[in-house]
Image (cartoon, rainbow, N blue to C red; front, side):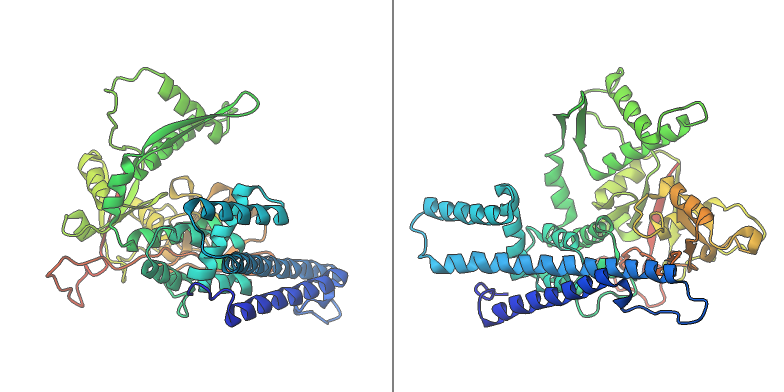
Length: 481
């Protein structure tokens, strides 16, 4: 959208339409609050209809309408902010100096802060987000107005496109909000993903398709590694480390593994408390290493890397389980320095090796466990981001009910949601060889599975892929034991 388009005839019409859509939704919601049965839902008119169940369903549908109202209202706020900022600039003559321009910006921010009862820093950030959405991210703003995404999703798109050239911004937005999205590779629209999971998707796509290679950006960012300390109330304080992604992920996994090993009947601490105690103990203990020497991660780290990238023929990013895309050099270093206990599996995601082993064994072989970690990536329950190392392998159809020990009848689930499945009416849907299971709630709602955004690897220059080559989508998977 060109500068000035926010307050031209089309921009004004968009604002008017947004306001009208919110008014309609608010009217619908007001009617639902007064009479929940007025919400459009399927009602069982048979003699054994349960009024309380119908009321419960109407409450859920009312929440869905309210979520759309909140999204549409956020879109109106964004359009009004962008239009106000643009109209204010149009009413003034060009600033005579940088000082005058800065003073006008401060006045604009102060006015918005007072109207919305915000701090000036928050008002400034909101104006920046409004400008980005109204001028560079029209499809995202339209999705917000339609209620198909929440305000948090829109903010994530703004944040992750910051600093990208216009062509890259358009490509990212088109991937997630274009007319062909969602596609079979994702099986979930942005609004169906909780914001934290959506951010992982957006960031992973951004890292893979950034105009500047991840290798170069990582090399620059390594210089910014640091430790920070922040005192907190109640006699507490925060310590944070900004580290290369593979090292940070390995530190977390190592602390988690040690913590799980200490848990037991006589251990009163939670895993969260044990992690903190382990980290403090290691940092305050005697260190035999030279200052500045960082060991190669030896904790459980699952790294997926395209085979040509591993061989050094391309610089395609690798994927670290629990973190996301990392430079290929990190994957090569993990392989080179990660000790001799790496399992190596060459995988063709077009069909893969047969992992179905029927009902000959209840227990999963190690190869099948590794396959599930690569397929699911995290707990499969809707919105859960619990990573692979803490999850349990669950038979979707129970073994005692005739369920087989095969990849299409297995899914990763964290301990909390594993208990929920067996104690309440949450039911996993069937999985496939390459797709994790979705879930069906006690109210009958189906929540589709979230699949990983896998892409074909890059081929080295001068190398033409053969249509039948098993390396077309090959990846190398390494699991440090």
